Amino acid sequence: MATEESTSVMDDYETLISTTDVELLKRAWRNEKSAPEILQFEASLVQRIKEQIELAEQNVEMFEADNIDPLTVSLYQMDLDRTQFLLRSYLRVRLQKIEKYLFYILKTDESLNRLSRQEQMFARRCTDDLGSHLDETVLAKLPDNYQSILKQSITSEEDDMVPVPRLDTFVICKAKQYLSGLDFEPEYSMEITEMERDLLTFVCYKFVKKPLENGKIDLV
Amino acid sequence: MAGQSDSMMSLFSPEEIEFMAEDELVEIVPNLRMDSLNFLCGDYGPFYPQLAAQVPLWLALALKKRGNAQLGLLNGCQLVLEAERDFHAFQPLPFHYVEISRLIFDHAREDIPDMYMVRSLIEDIRDVRFHKVETNLEKFTASTVTAQGDTDNRDILVYLLALANVWKNMSAMEVNIIRAFSGRALQAFYKHDNEQQTSDTDRTLDKQPQIPTDRPKIEKCISAVVNDGPAVSAMLIKHTNYKLYDGQGRGPPGCPTSTNRAYLLKSIQLAWNQNLGPGMWMGIESILNNSVIRSPDQPPPPPPPRARGKQGFQRCSRVKAEDQELVEKRGLRNDRDLSSAKHY
Image (cartoon, each protein chain N blue to C red):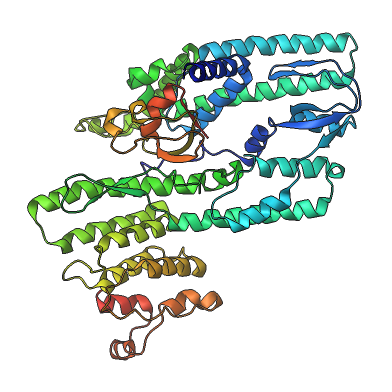
């Protein structure tokens, strides 16, 4: 029993040290694409990747200057291109989500904390611009009760002009290890009791939100 | 359509799936010597001539293009095809087998022994698997769990679709194809079913008669038709049809079987009059026909009129003999007038 535990711990450790940053970025990119709401920004990961990319770019320049075999140079360049694509696509997907749920994100602190600093600046500037644009073109000309961006009219109790991310969309996911009912939120435990490892599952997003944050589930 | 989720963002394009497939490791036999490569995504090499090495697919293809390597490839497609045909479940295949095989065929044709054979085998495997996917989509409902202590035998649906081995080994491309459709279909199920749960609790508390509560269900189906598309609504109708009857196949009291269904059909027809092609309409009809549970003493309904080509749509709702009188009496021209005259 003790040996089994220790080997599994060793396996985890080995997978941990052998997973490259690129793998982690790919995983973050896939999760971000599949999830209906914006996920936590992986600040440290992005920072590390940026540094690695800069280093690789310098390497490529050096190789070209040194007249190293053009085949090797082109291969390094290809690898660099692939990593850059991942990073760009990851940031692009996040920006799309921010633009889509702009007002909602700025309203909820929880979502706001998931953005990086630059993304927060972008979101604020975007709301300012969008707000002033809507005001000038449309809202100023509507009757007094209907001039709010966030509410349909003054009589609305909540901000009903703000689109909210739908957390009950269905996503496909794979569990990386066997998950028992404890890993899920207790209020959903009647509905989802377990998940086997490596089994493709269609499930409501809000049920798997917690294991996703803990890194136990991958969205496909 | 407020409240519709924008599915465009969560879809992976085929190129992106190919991108992910290119990271899979394959074996190559290089014919040159190269020092080890320290990529961002891992370290590979050093490469010695005639000694096999494992590299990512994109690297293998790049080397192949420059004539520096040969791919050592997977065999045994024949066995996989036979197994695929015989078993109900999916066979374990590499997750990205479609993309990998396509890439290899495009760039590394000579390395495959019996190229044409393998190519046709892979095509067959793809067809068989996708056929399985389609049949399973038709059959799926969620697995149901009965609430404890509920004497009404009401079901609480659990939307967990990890059933058996069927979904276990689907490949990336197949997943991507059905992702958007099945996601939205399940979402529609969930939404309508949760509303129904709350309305059910009201019903059992108040002991209202069954008939009025069927109308909201039917109207939900209609709204599903309009908003969620015909395919989703077909599955929804099938699902709801199950709920219109209890286990013995008897309809709700006072509501003959055919009325509900006919009402449904007419509503769909009206809602989609200009948009449904004949094929789609026949498909919905057949799903509905297959899902009606009849009680034993009821005679089976007459089979639907056969559609022939483009006239299928009109033929489905062609004027029957007994309706001729109505037509003659009131000078009705087309089916819409007829149906409104019959007060469905």
